[in-house]
Image 1: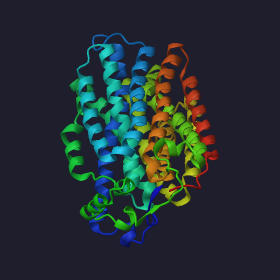
Image 2 (image 1 turned 120 degrees about the vertical axis):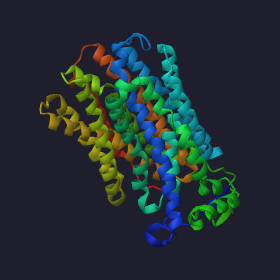
Image 3 (image 1 turned 90 degrees about the vertical axis):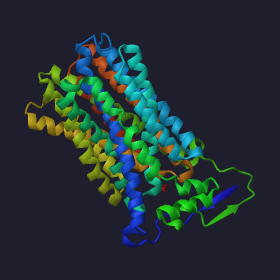
Length: 447
């Protein structure tokens, strides 16, 4: 067995974990690219929920939609995301993160553009599935890329900065729907979502390096050193000092083989369950919250502002909580945010004062979307390099099963004529289960 031996993940660097100004700029560039990619991920998630009332009210757009069909269309995206995320693990750990991300950026843009020209339910559903494949790669790969380059003491914060693009994109989608839908229509909103191919892809080609640590693990140390020199990454952190060859006859497991064996098996199952519960609530709420609020007497614009509150709370909450997680660890923070979401969703149907309602929605955003961002950060730091992409793919991919269930379950509950309290109760129970899983997850083997 051949093993690459790295220096400790906390090298002695000046300027607070920065080797130089160029090193800092290089890492900031990587995080910025991932942040922009996640903005469009979040935009895609929320823009469908924002335009759903229009599609359901006007059959001339893509056809006659009832709540069940609408929920199924929302779940189509999640199916694509699940497949893309799970596939990203095998692909990324073998061909590298950079090329995988570049293809995903182009793929996503093409899918959004195709959706803008859909005239039938079938074609629209196909474009949602197609787009979801790229979103799965972006969501799973983004955290692995950030984890490779972030300074050790700032991993949770940098991860949160990247993934906070998801709720930020949700805020953008909600506001654009409020401001521009009457002007450019829902098709124009989808074309905005196709814009990454015009600016993000060229930017990533120029600024996004391959992971030197991954190159070293693949036996390409010379290429890794060249990248370290170009971007001024600390070579002692990224490039193996020596290669140890043993005659045990055992091949070190990589990818999914690593995360489903030995000491990683139980944490992997618990992490997957946590992600399932969090993402079920995330996508269920982002799809149906405006519809539920409108059915309870809110105006159309006021109901869309609940999406703004949900995603604003997620963005601010994720950044604040990730800072705390870097100090005290992710377990107590994630347990707290899950519990906060549960309490708010149990209370939400009984709140009649608008200020309290929007506050509860914002705290729920912190407790579901914000929590999932923290789970991504915990996951990317838990597994070693040889299994990190697979771990992220598992967390994102299996979690997306919850994303499939959430919109469909919301549609079924509404079709059955159940009220807001029933829908919120279901999602609240999911966050309680997530909190229990976090309490049971051992994190002693974090990398």
